[in-house]
Length: 529
Image 1 (tube, rainbow, N blue to C red):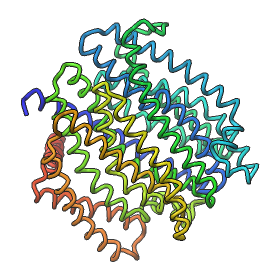
Image 2 (cartoon, one colour):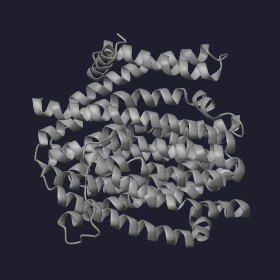
Image 3 (cartoon, helix red, strand yellow):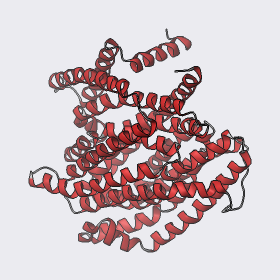
Protein backbone atom coordinates (compact mmCIF):
# COMPACT_ATOMS: atom_id res chain seq x y z
CA UNK A 1 0.00 0.00 0.00
CA UNK A 2 1.60 3.30 -1.10
CA UNK A 3 1.76 6.44 1.01
CA UNK A 4 -1.11 8.15 -0.79
CA UNK A 5 -3.37 5.13 -0.29
CA UNK A 6 -2.39 4.92 3.37
CA UNK A 7 -3.22 8.61 3.77
CA UNK A 8 -6.68 8.14 2.23
CA UNK A 9 -7.36 5.06 4.34
CA UNK A 10 -6.21 6.89 7.47
CA UNK A 11 -8.45 9.85 6.62
CA UNK A 12 -11.44 7.55 6.22
CA UNK A 13 -10.59 5.76 9.48
CA UNK A 14 -10.40 9.03 11.41
CA UNK A 15 -13.64 10.28 9.88
CA UNK A 16 -15.29 6.94 10.58
CA UNK A 17 -14.14 7.18 14.19
CA UNK A 18 -15.74 10.62 14.56
CA UNK A 19 -18.96 9.44 12.92
CA UNK A 20 -18.97 6.30 15.07
CA UNK A 21 -18.59 8.38 18.24
CA UNK A 22 -21.50 10.59 17.16
CA UNK A 23 -23.59 7.55 16.25
CA UNK A 24 -22.89 5.95 19.62
CA UNK A 25 -24.08 9.16 21.28
CA UNK A 26 -27.14 9.15 19.03
CA UNK A 27 -27.81 5.52 19.87
CA UNK A 28 -27.60 6.27 23.58
CA UNK A 29 -30.00 9.19 23.14
CA UNK A 30 -32.24 6.93 21.09
CA UNK A 31 -32.20 4.30 23.82
CA UNK A 32 -33.25 6.88 26.37
CA UNK A 33 -36.09 7.92 24.09
CA UNK A 34 -37.19 4.33 23.48
CA UNK A 35 -37.08 3.55 27.19
CA UNK A 36 -39.30 6.54 27.95
CA UNK A 37 -41.71 5.78 25.12
CA UNK A 38 -41.92 2.10 26.05
CA UNK A 39 -42.60 2.97 29.69
CA UNK A 40 -45.34 5.41 28.70
CA UNK A 41 -47.09 3.42 25.96
CA UNK A 42 -45.79 -0.18 26.01
CA UNK A 43 -46.91 -2.24 23.00
CA UNK A 44 -50.59 -1.33 23.19
CA UNK A 45 -53.04 0.39 20.84
CA UNK A 46 -51.58 3.90 21.02
CA UNK A 47 -48.08 2.69 20.17
CA UNK A 48 -49.37 0.48 17.37
CA UNK A 49 -51.17 3.47 15.81
CA UNK A 50 -48.09 5.69 16.14
CA UNK A 51 -45.71 3.16 14.57
CA UNK A 52 -48.03 2.54 11.65
CA UNK A 53 -48.66 6.26 11.06
CA UNK A 54 -44.97 7.15 11.19
CA UNK A 55 -44.29 4.76 8.32
CA UNK A 56 -45.73 7.27 5.80
CA UNK A 57 -43.43 10.16 6.75
CA UNK A 58 -40.41 7.85 6.85
CA UNK A 59 -41.29 6.52 3.40
CA UNK A 60 -41.58 9.99 1.86
CA UNK A 61 -38.24 10.99 3.36
CA UNK A 62 -36.43 7.82 2.22
CA UNK A 63 -37.94 7.88 -1.26
CA UNK A 64 -36.94 11.42 -2.16
CA UNK A 65 -34.18 12.71 0.06
CA UNK A 66 -32.85 10.02 2.35
CA UNK A 67 -30.04 7.68 1.46
CA UNK A 68 -31.37 7.45 -2.08
CA UNK A 69 -30.65 11.08 -2.93
CA UNK A 70 -27.38 11.17 -0.99
CA UNK A 71 -26.03 8.22 -2.97
CA UNK A 72 -26.72 10.10 -6.22
CA UNK A 73 -25.85 13.59 -5.01
CA UNK A 74 -22.57 13.09 -3.12
CA UNK A 75 -20.56 11.45 -5.96
CA UNK A 76 -21.63 14.18 -8.41
CA UNK A 77 -21.18 17.05 -5.95
CA UNK A 78 -17.80 15.69 -4.74
CA UNK A 79 -16.65 15.28 -8.34
CA UNK A 80 -17.29 19.00 -8.99
CA UNK A 81 -15.44 19.97 -5.80
CA UNK A 82 -12.30 17.93 -6.55
CA UNK A 83 -12.20 19.50 -10.02
CA UNK A 84 -12.35 22.98 -8.42
CA UNK A 85 -15.78 23.79 -9.89
CA UNK A 86 -17.17 25.29 -6.69
CA UNK A 87 -19.81 27.55 -8.22
CA UNK A 88 -21.20 24.71 -10.31
CA UNK A 89 -21.29 22.54 -7.21
CA UNK A 90 -23.41 25.10 -5.35
CA UNK A 91 -25.72 25.57 -8.33
CA UNK A 92 -26.23 21.81 -8.27
CA UNK A 93 -26.94 21.79 -4.52
CA UNK A 94 -29.43 24.66 -4.86
CA UNK A 95 -31.25 23.01 -7.74
CA UNK A 96 -31.60 19.71 -5.91
CA UNK A 97 -32.79 21.49 -2.74
CA UNK A 98 -35.48 23.31 -4.74
CA UNK A 99 -36.60 20.07 -6.39
CA UNK A 100 -36.75 18.25 -3.07
CA UNK A 101 -38.87 20.97 -1.49
CA UNK A 102 -41.35 20.95 -4.37
CA UNK A 103 -41.66 17.16 -4.69
CA UNK A 104 -41.81 16.31 -0.99
CA UNK A 105 -44.25 19.17 -0.34
CA UNK A 106 -46.63 17.92 -3.01
CA UNK A 107 -46.40 14.30 -1.85
CA UNK A 108 -47.08 15.37 1.74
CA UNK A 109 -50.20 17.26 0.66
CA UNK A 110 -51.48 14.25 -1.31
CA UNK A 111 -50.78 11.96 1.66
CA UNK A 112 -52.68 14.31 3.97
CA UNK A 113 -55.75 14.22 1.73
CA UNK A 114 -55.68 10.44 1.20
CA UNK A 115 -54.71 9.52 4.78
CA UNK A 116 -57.93 7.54 5.57
CA UNK A 117 -57.62 5.49 2.39
CA UNK A 118 -53.88 4.89 2.95
CA UNK A 119 -54.51 3.51 6.44
CA UNK A 120 -57.58 1.43 5.63
CA UNK A 121 -56.61 -0.12 2.30
CA UNK A 122 -52.82 -0.07 2.18
CA UNK A 123 -50.99 0.41 5.46
CA UNK A 124 -52.95 -1.30 8.24
CA UNK A 125 -56.16 -3.01 7.09
CA UNK A 126 -56.12 -5.03 10.31
CA UNK A 127 -56.92 -1.83 12.22
CA UNK A 128 -60.41 -1.65 10.67
CA UNK A 129 -61.55 -4.02 13.41
CA UNK A 130 -60.95 -1.18 15.87
CA UNK A 131 -62.40 2.13 14.51
CA UNK A 132 -60.78 4.16 17.31
CA UNK A 133 -57.36 2.74 16.51
CA UNK A 134 -57.86 3.37 12.80
CA UNK A 135 -58.99 7.00 13.31
CA UNK A 136 -56.07 7.63 15.65
CA UNK A 137 -53.63 6.31 13.02
CA UNK A 138 -55.08 8.69 10.39
CA UNK A 139 -54.79 11.66 12.75
CA UNK A 140 -51.18 10.87 13.71
CA UNK A 141 -50.22 10.29 10.09
CA UNK A 142 -51.41 13.78 9.12
CA UNK A 143 -49.79 15.37 12.15
CA UNK A 144 -46.32 13.98 11.39
CA UNK A 145 -46.21 14.77 7.66
CA UNK A 146 -44.29 18.10 8.04
CA UNK A 147 -41.37 16.09 9.42
CA UNK A 148 -40.90 14.52 5.98
CA UNK A 149 -40.19 17.95 4.43
CA UNK A 150 -37.77 18.95 7.20
CA UNK A 151 -35.93 15.61 7.15
CA UNK A 152 -35.61 15.78 3.37
CA UNK A 153 -33.89 19.17 3.40
CA UNK A 154 -31.74 18.04 6.31
CA UNK A 155 -30.67 14.94 4.39
CA UNK A 156 -29.47 17.07 1.48
CA UNK A 157 -27.53 19.40 3.80
CA UNK A 158 -25.92 16.32 5.33
CA UNK A 159 -24.72 15.28 1.86
CA UNK A 160 -23.24 18.75 1.25
CA UNK A 161 -21.35 18.69 4.56
CA UNK A 162 -20.09 15.12 4.06
CA UNK A 163 -18.76 16.08 0.63
CA UNK A 164 -16.70 18.78 2.37
CA UNK A 165 -15.33 16.14 4.80
CA UNK A 166 -17.56 17.46 7.61
CA UNK A 167 -18.90 14.37 9.36
CA UNK A 168 -19.26 14.89 13.11
CA UNK A 169 -22.05 17.50 13.16
CA UNK A 170 -24.22 15.67 10.58
CA UNK A 171 -23.73 12.44 12.52
CA UNK A 172 -25.05 14.19 15.64
CA UNK A 173 -28.35 15.08 13.97
CA UNK A 174 -30.11 11.82 14.94
CA UNK A 175 -29.50 12.84 18.57
CA UNK A 176 -31.43 16.04 17.91
CA UNK A 177 -34.33 14.01 16.54
CA UNK A 178 -34.29 11.83 19.64
CA UNK A 179 -34.23 14.92 21.88
CA UNK A 180 -37.34 16.22 20.14
CA UNK A 181 -39.13 12.94 20.81
CA UNK A 182 -37.92 12.91 24.41
CA UNK A 183 -39.44 16.38 24.79
CA UNK A 184 -42.64 15.04 23.28
CA UNK A 185 -42.95 12.08 25.65
CA UNK A 186 -41.84 13.96 28.79
CA UNK A 187 -43.48 17.36 28.34
CA UNK A 188 -46.29 16.95 25.82
CA UNK A 189 -47.50 13.37 26.23
CA UNK A 190 -48.69 13.75 29.85
CA UNK A 191 -51.23 16.30 28.60
CA UNK A 192 -51.74 15.21 24.99
CA UNK A 193 -51.20 11.44 25.08
CA UNK A 194 -49.74 9.80 21.98
CA UNK A 195 -50.33 13.04 20.04
CA UNK A 196 -47.58 14.63 22.16
CA UNK A 197 -45.13 12.02 20.88
CA UNK A 198 -46.16 12.82 17.30
CA UNK A 199 -45.46 16.51 17.91
CA UNK A 200 -42.09 15.40 19.29
CA UNK A 201 -41.34 13.87 15.88
CA UNK A 202 -42.00 17.21 14.17
CA UNK A 203 -39.90 19.11 16.74
CA UNK A 204 -37.11 16.54 16.40
CA UNK A 205 -37.05 16.89 12.61
CA UNK A 206 -36.69 20.68 12.97
CA UNK A 207 -33.75 20.19 15.37
CA UNK A 208 -32.25 17.62 12.97
CA UNK A 209 -32.25 20.26 10.22
CA UNK A 210 -31.34 23.24 12.38
CA UNK A 211 -28.20 21.72 13.92
CA UNK A 212 -26.50 21.63 10.51
CA UNK A 213 -27.28 25.18 9.44
CA UNK A 214 -24.27 26.85 11.20
CA UNK A 215 -21.87 24.35 9.57
CA UNK A 216 -23.52 24.95 6.19
CA UNK A 217 -23.15 28.72 6.59
CA UNK A 218 -19.45 28.32 7.41
CA UNK A 219 -18.88 26.76 3.99
CA UNK A 220 -19.81 30.15 2.48
CA UNK A 221 -21.69 28.59 -0.37
CA UNK A 222 -24.17 30.36 -2.63
CA UNK A 223 -27.88 29.69 -3.02
CA UNK A 224 -29.42 29.95 -6.50
CA UNK A 225 -33.18 30.29 -7.08
CA UNK A 226 -33.22 27.92 -10.00
CA UNK A 227 -33.91 24.30 -10.93
CA UNK A 228 -30.95 24.47 -13.36
CA UNK A 229 -32.32 21.85 -15.74
CA UNK A 230 -29.66 22.83 -18.28
CA UNK A 231 -26.80 21.72 -15.99
CA UNK A 232 -25.31 18.32 -16.90
CA UNK A 233 -24.63 17.72 -13.20
CA UNK A 234 -28.33 18.10 -12.32
CA UNK A 235 -29.26 15.64 -15.04
CA UNK A 236 -26.53 13.30 -13.78
CA UNK A 237 -27.96 13.34 -10.24
CA UNK A 238 -31.44 12.62 -11.61
CA UNK A 239 -30.03 9.83 -13.81
CA UNK A 240 -28.30 8.24 -10.83
CA UNK A 241 -31.27 8.88 -8.56
CA UNK A 242 -33.92 7.22 -10.75
CA UNK A 243 -32.78 3.60 -10.36
CA UNK A 244 -31.89 4.22 -6.71
CA UNK A 245 -35.44 5.50 -6.18
CA UNK A 246 -36.78 2.20 -7.48
CA UNK A 247 -34.57 0.31 -5.04
CA UNK A 248 -35.67 2.40 -2.06
CA UNK A 249 -39.31 2.07 -3.14
CA UNK A 250 -38.96 -1.72 -3.08
CA UNK A 251 -37.45 -1.60 0.41
CA UNK A 252 -40.20 0.71 1.66
CA UNK A 253 -42.80 -1.53 0.04
CA UNK A 254 -41.42 -4.38 2.09
CA UNK A 255 -41.77 -2.32 5.30
CA UNK A 256 -45.35 -1.46 4.38
CA UNK A 257 -46.18 -5.11 3.70
CA UNK A 258 -44.60 -6.14 7.01
CA UNK A 259 -46.70 -3.52 8.80
CA UNK A 260 -49.76 -4.71 6.91
CA UNK A 261 -49.13 -8.37 7.84
CA UNK A 262 -48.28 -7.51 11.46
CA UNK A 263 -51.49 -5.46 11.78
CA UNK A 264 -53.44 -8.72 11.34
CA UNK A 265 -51.37 -10.56 13.96
CA UNK A 266 -51.77 -10.42 17.78
CA UNK A 267 -51.61 -6.91 19.25
CA UNK A 268 -48.06 -5.81 19.84
CA UNK A 269 -46.70 -7.40 16.67
CA UNK A 270 -46.29 -4.09 14.83
CA UNK A 271 -44.41 -2.57 17.75
CA UNK A 272 -42.44 -5.79 18.20
CA UNK A 273 -40.97 -5.68 14.70
CA UNK A 274 -40.39 -1.91 14.87
CA UNK A 275 -38.47 -2.06 18.15
CA UNK A 276 -36.66 -5.27 17.21
CA UNK A 277 -35.49 -3.80 13.91
CA UNK A 278 -34.51 -0.53 15.62
CA UNK A 279 -32.37 -2.37 18.18
CA UNK A 280 -30.62 -4.34 15.43
CA UNK A 281 -29.95 -1.11 13.54
CA UNK A 282 -28.12 0.45 16.52
CA UNK A 283 -24.93 -1.61 16.15
CA UNK A 284 -25.39 -1.52 12.37
CA UNK A 285 -25.38 2.29 12.45
CA UNK A 286 -22.40 2.55 14.78
CA UNK A 287 -20.38 -0.04 12.83
CA UNK A 288 -21.35 0.11 9.17
CA UNK A 289 -22.99 3.46 8.57
CA UNK A 290 -20.12 5.30 10.24
CA UNK A 291 -17.57 3.62 7.97
CA UNK A 292 -19.73 3.90 4.84
CA UNK A 293 -20.58 7.59 5.37
CA UNK A 294 -16.93 8.43 5.98
CA UNK A 295 -15.74 6.37 3.00
CA UNK A 296 -18.21 7.58 0.33
CA UNK A 297 -16.64 11.01 -0.38
CA UNK A 298 -13.14 9.47 -0.49
CA UNK A 299 -14.28 6.62 -2.73
CA UNK A 300 -16.05 9.15 -4.96
CA UNK A 301 -12.89 11.25 -5.22
CA UNK A 302 -10.74 8.19 -6.04
CA UNK A 303 -13.15 7.21 -8.80
CA UNK A 304 -13.39 10.75 -10.20
CA UNK A 305 -9.58 10.87 -10.45
CA UNK A 306 -9.28 7.33 -11.85
CA UNK A 307 -7.37 5.96 -8.82
CA UNK A 308 -8.87 2.48 -8.79
CA UNK A 309 -6.08 0.82 -6.75
CA UNK A 310 -6.69 3.36 -4.00
CA UNK A 311 -10.44 2.81 -4.41
CA UNK A 312 -10.02 -0.94 -3.87
CA UNK A 313 -7.70 -0.48 -0.88
CA UNK A 314 -10.10 1.95 0.81
CA UNK A 315 -13.07 -0.37 0.27
CA UNK A 316 -11.24 -3.48 1.52
CA UNK A 317 -10.02 -1.63 4.61
CA UNK A 318 -13.61 -0.61 5.34
CA UNK A 319 -14.90 -4.16 4.87
CA UNK A 320 -12.26 -5.58 7.21
CA UNK A 321 -13.06 -3.07 9.92
CA UNK A 322 -16.79 -3.72 9.59
CA UNK A 323 -16.45 -7.52 9.80
CA UNK A 324 -14.23 -7.37 12.90
CA UNK A 325 -16.97 -5.46 14.73
CA UNK A 326 -20.15 -6.86 13.16
CA UNK A 327 -19.51 -10.58 13.75
CA UNK A 328 -19.14 -10.36 17.57
CA UNK A 329 -21.95 -7.78 17.75
CA UNK A 330 -24.29 -10.23 16.01
CA UNK A 331 -23.35 -13.15 18.27
CA UNK A 332 -23.46 -11.12 21.47
CA UNK A 333 -26.81 -9.52 20.72
CA UNK A 334 -28.39 -12.89 19.92
CA UNK A 335 -27.25 -14.41 23.22
CA UNK A 336 -28.00 -11.39 25.41
CA UNK A 337 -31.19 -10.27 23.66
CA UNK A 338 -33.67 -10.96 26.49
CA UNK A 339 -31.78 -9.28 29.35
CA UNK A 340 -30.93 -6.34 27.08
CA UNK A 341 -34.57 -5.80 26.05
CA UNK A 342 -35.73 -6.18 29.66
CA UNK A 343 -33.05 -3.75 30.86
CA UNK A 344 -33.96 -1.14 28.28
CA UNK A 345 -37.73 -1.31 28.19
CA UNK A 346 -39.44 -3.47 30.84
CA UNK A 347 -41.10 -0.94 33.11
CA UNK A 348 -44.42 0.90 33.25
CA UNK A 349 -46.73 -0.15 30.41
CA UNK A 350 -43.99 -2.35 28.91
CA UNK A 351 -44.62 -5.78 30.46
CA UNK A 352 -42.72 -9.08 30.42
CA UNK A 353 -44.94 -10.10 27.50
CA UNK A 354 -43.76 -6.99 25.63
CA UNK A 355 -40.17 -8.08 26.32
CA UNK A 356 -40.89 -11.46 24.73
CA UNK A 357 -42.46 -9.80 21.68
CA UNK A 358 -39.46 -7.55 21.05
CA UNK A 359 -36.70 -10.03 21.92
CA UNK A 360 -38.28 -12.62 19.61
CA UNK A 361 -38.18 -10.19 16.68
CA UNK A 362 -34.68 -9.06 17.68
CA UNK A 363 -33.38 -12.64 17.55
CA UNK A 364 -34.35 -13.12 13.93
CA UNK A 365 -33.37 -9.60 12.81
CA UNK A 366 -29.93 -9.92 14.42
CA UNK A 367 -29.18 -13.05 12.37
CA UNK A 368 -28.87 -10.62 9.44
CA UNK A 369 -26.70 -8.00 11.15
CA UNK A 370 -23.49 -8.89 9.30
CA UNK A 371 -25.36 -8.87 6.00
CA UNK A 372 -26.82 -5.42 6.68
CA UNK A 373 -23.37 -4.07 7.60
CA UNK A 374 -21.59 -5.42 4.51
CA UNK A 375 -24.38 -4.30 2.17
CA UNK A 376 -24.12 -0.77 3.59
CA UNK A 377 -20.55 -0.18 2.39
CA UNK A 378 -20.72 -2.26 -0.80
CA UNK A 379 -23.78 -0.36 -2.02
CA UNK A 380 -22.07 2.98 -1.37
CA UNK A 381 -18.99 1.80 -3.23
CA UNK A 382 -21.16 1.23 -6.29
CA UNK A 383 -22.72 4.68 -5.84
CA UNK A 384 -19.24 6.22 -5.69
CA UNK A 385 -18.60 4.65 -9.11
CA UNK A 386 -21.76 6.39 -10.42
CA UNK A 387 -23.42 2.97 -10.66
CA UNK A 388 -26.78 3.04 -8.91
CA UNK A 389 -28.30 0.39 -11.15
CA UNK A 390 -26.35 -2.63 -9.89
CA UNK A 391 -27.16 -2.31 -6.16
CA UNK A 392 -30.74 -1.38 -7.04
CA UNK A 393 -31.24 -4.47 -9.19
CA UNK A 394 -29.66 -6.75 -6.60
CA UNK A 395 -31.53 -5.04 -3.77
CA UNK A 396 -34.84 -5.21 -5.60
CA UNK A 397 -34.43 -8.94 -6.19
CA UNK A 398 -33.53 -9.41 -2.52
CA UNK A 399 -36.48 -7.36 -1.31
CA UNK A 400 -38.77 -9.23 -3.68
CA UNK A 401 -37.60 -12.41 -1.97
CA UNK A 402 -38.14 -10.65 1.35
CA UNK A 403 -41.79 -10.02 0.56
CA UNK A 404 -42.34 -13.65 -0.44
CA UNK A 405 -40.43 -14.89 2.61
CA UNK A 406 -42.52 -12.61 4.85
CA UNK A 407 -45.77 -14.33 3.93
CA UNK A 408 -44.16 -17.77 3.95
CA UNK A 409 -42.25 -17.53 7.23
CA UNK A 410 -44.97 -15.74 9.21
CA UNK A 411 -47.37 -18.54 8.26
CA UNK A 412 -44.73 -21.16 9.01
CA UNK A 413 -44.01 -19.65 12.42
CA UNK A 414 -47.73 -19.56 13.19
CA UNK A 415 -48.12 -23.23 12.24
CA UNK A 416 -45.17 -24.07 14.50
CA UNK A 417 -46.91 -22.34 17.40
CA UNK A 418 -44.30 -19.55 17.44
CA UNK A 419 -45.08 -15.81 17.49
CA UNK A 420 -45.64 -15.10 13.76
CA UNK A 421 -43.96 -11.68 13.65
CA UNK A 422 -40.61 -13.46 14.09
CA UNK A 423 -41.07 -14.83 10.59
CA UNK A 424 -41.13 -11.27 9.23
CA UNK A 425 -37.76 -10.61 10.86
CA UNK A 426 -36.22 -13.85 9.55
CA UNK A 427 -37.43 -12.98 6.05
CA UNK A 428 -35.53 -9.69 6.21
CA UNK A 429 -32.33 -11.36 7.41
CA UNK A 430 -32.35 -14.09 4.77
CA UNK A 431 -33.07 -11.66 1.94
CA UNK A 432 -30.26 -9.37 3.13
CA UNK A 433 -27.85 -12.33 3.12
CA UNK A 434 -28.69 -12.93 -0.55
CA UNK A 435 -28.14 -9.23 -1.25
CA UNK A 436 -24.73 -9.31 0.45
CA UNK A 437 -23.58 -12.31 -1.58
CA UNK A 438 -24.78 -10.78 -4.85
CA UNK A 439 -23.13 -7.39 -4.28
CA UNK A 440 -19.87 -9.01 -3.11
CA UNK A 441 -19.67 -11.13 -6.25
CA UNK A 442 -20.39 -8.23 -8.59
CA UNK A 443 -17.96 -5.87 -6.84
CA UNK A 444 -15.29 -8.58 -7.00
CA UNK A 445 -15.79 -8.77 -10.77
CA UNK A 446 -15.90 -4.99 -11.14
CA UNK A 447 -12.60 -4.40 -9.32
CA UNK A 448 -11.00 -7.66 -10.51
CA UNK A 449 -10.53 -8.84 -6.97
CA UNK A 450 -11.30 -7.80 -3.40
CA UNK A 451 -8.30 -9.30 -1.61
CA UNK A 452 -10.42 -12.31 -0.77
CA UNK A 453 -7.72 -14.14 1.20
CA UNK A 454 -7.24 -11.22 3.57
CA UNK A 455 -10.99 -10.83 4.10
CA UNK A 456 -11.35 -14.59 4.64
CA UNK A 457 -8.60 -14.44 7.26
CA UNK A 458 -10.42 -11.64 9.08
CA UNK A 459 -13.67 -13.65 9.02
CA UNK A 460 -11.90 -16.75 10.35
CA UNK A 461 -10.16 -14.84 13.15
CA UNK A 462 -13.36 -13.05 14.14
CA UNK A 463 -15.37 -16.28 14.07
CA UNK A 464 -12.86 -18.10 16.31
CA UNK A 465 -12.79 -15.18 18.75
CA UNK A 466 -16.60 -15.05 18.69
CA UNK A 467 -16.73 -18.79 19.43
CA UNK A 468 -14.73 -18.20 22.61
CA UNK A 469 -17.06 -15.31 23.42
CA UNK A 470 -20.11 -17.60 23.05
CA UNK A 471 -18.73 -20.07 25.60
CA UNK A 472 -18.04 -17.25 28.04
CA UNK A 473 -21.50 -15.70 27.62
CA UNK A 474 -23.34 -19.00 28.01
CA UNK A 475 -21.42 -19.63 31.24
CA UNK A 476 -22.22 -16.09 32.38
CA UNK A 477 -25.97 -16.45 31.73
CA UNK A 478 -26.03 -19.74 33.62
CA UNK A 479 -24.20 -18.40 36.69
CA UNK A 480 -25.80 -14.94 36.84
CA UNK A 481 -29.49 -15.93 36.89
CA UNK A 482 -30.03 -14.52 40.36
CA UNK A 483 -28.46 -11.15 39.55
CA UNK A 484 -30.38 -8.04 38.54
CA UNK A 485 -30.92 -7.67 34.81
CA UNK A 486 -28.58 -4.64 34.82
CA UNK A 487 -25.62 -6.76 35.89
CA UNK A 488 -26.57 -9.65 33.63
CA UNK A 489 -26.61 -7.36 30.58
CA UNK A 490 -23.68 -5.07 31.33
CA UNK A 491 -21.57 -7.89 32.77
CA UNK A 492 -22.26 -10.00 29.70
CA UNK A 493 -21.36 -7.19 27.31
CA UNK A 494 -18.12 -6.45 29.18
CA UNK A 495 -17.12 -10.10 29.48
CA UNK A 496 -17.98 -10.92 25.87
CA UNK A 497 -16.09 -7.91 24.55
CA UNK A 498 -13.02 -8.67 26.65
CA UNK A 499 -12.91 -12.32 25.60
CA UNK A 500 -13.25 -11.35 21.94
CA UNK A 501 -10.46 -8.77 22.13
CA UNK A 502 -8.07 -11.11 23.94
CA UNK A 503 -8.57 -14.00 21.52
CA UNK A 504 -8.41 -11.63 18.54
CA UNK A 505 -5.16 -10.16 19.83
CA UNK A 506 -3.65 -13.62 20.32
CA UNK A 507 -4.69 -14.61 16.80
CA UNK A 508 -2.92 -11.53 15.45
CA UNK A 509 -5.96 -9.70 14.09
CA UNK A 510 -4.54 -6.45 12.67
CA UNK A 511 -7.71 -4.41 13.10
CA UNK A 512 -7.99 -5.31 16.78
CA UNK A 513 -4.32 -4.62 17.45
CA UNK A 514 -4.47 -1.33 15.57
CA UNK A 515 -7.61 -0.29 17.42
CA UNK A 516 -6.13 -1.07 20.83
CA UNK A 517 -2.95 0.79 19.88
CA UNK A 518 -4.93 3.87 18.85
CA UNK A 519 -6.86 3.81 22.15
CA UNK A 520 -3.58 3.56 24.08
CA UNK A 521 -2.18 6.54 22.17
CA UNK A 522 -5.30 8.59 22.94
CA UNK A 523 -5.12 7.69 26.64
CA UNK A 524 -1.44 8.62 26.78
CA UNK A 525 -2.16 11.89 25.01
CA UNK A 526 -4.82 12.92 27.53
CA UNK A 527 -2.70 11.77 30.49
CA UNK A 528 -4.56 8.62 31.54
CA UNK A 529 -1.53 6.40 30.83
